[in-house]
Image (cartoon, protein in one colour):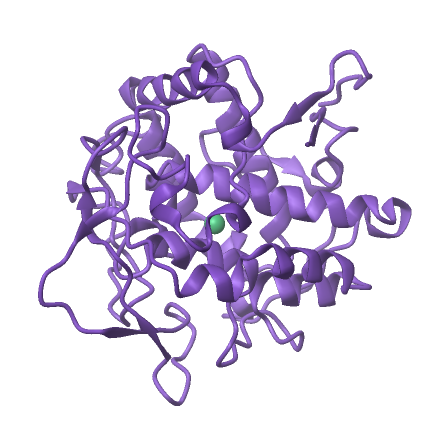
Length: 352
Ligand SMILES: [Cu+2]
């Protein structure tokens, strides 16, 4: 699977707030269209996959242990976001998928063009929850053992409940929760049908500490090799994936928890793609990776490290670029080698 990428057909993915209101409206309509298409999975096998959008979540859930905290993390999500972009295209959205640059919104996410609840946003924050505890504990999801102190305490965000207004405030999430970031509960019934509203808990604690512009620049500029880069990106201390420390989210987990916080879908390690902003967050992760790659493309084109399992639980061999990336029924499996560049292989895009 290769296409010829030239200056005439390359597309540039842009930040959400820098595409026109018309394009934002078209994007939102296309997401609703994906949500109206039939599931790729049989009801009997996956009762929670009610439509094509759910099937994306289902594939992520099913492959969580193969696609995180290991060799496949960056490449798998690059391919996954691209496959979603093709689904939007089939639903009439002709632009490249936009990304969300968290840095703009760390101080006041409720005013963000992504979350202000206007018809041109991805919906609002969650409704404030009355009588909630002032802090909650956040730690790595099962099967990773909890840190000795049980996780670290995060002040509650401004939301915590269902979206209040705007696009997707009326949507139903059909899958999960499986492993919410805010507690150690875990459902082994990964494909069950469990209709819920979309929940967010945006606040001002997590953003400035993990996903402000300075952290993105630091991740890109201070990482001489892939171990250093992924350590900063994922909050891994560099001794192996999943070695979380007290101050360890990195950009990836920071963006997830910034939105999902306390029990929001974005805080669920498995079922996070049920929040439509997941794909903009992961486009931004992909952007940071591709910028880092292009600072020394020859050295960094095929740079990846780790084994084939989630935090190497259970232990597996190291990955290679010949290993296939599984997309379930969404798309054919492809060797990682094809995914490592955004401009030669099946892809032809870059970021503005
Ligand atoms: Cu993921």
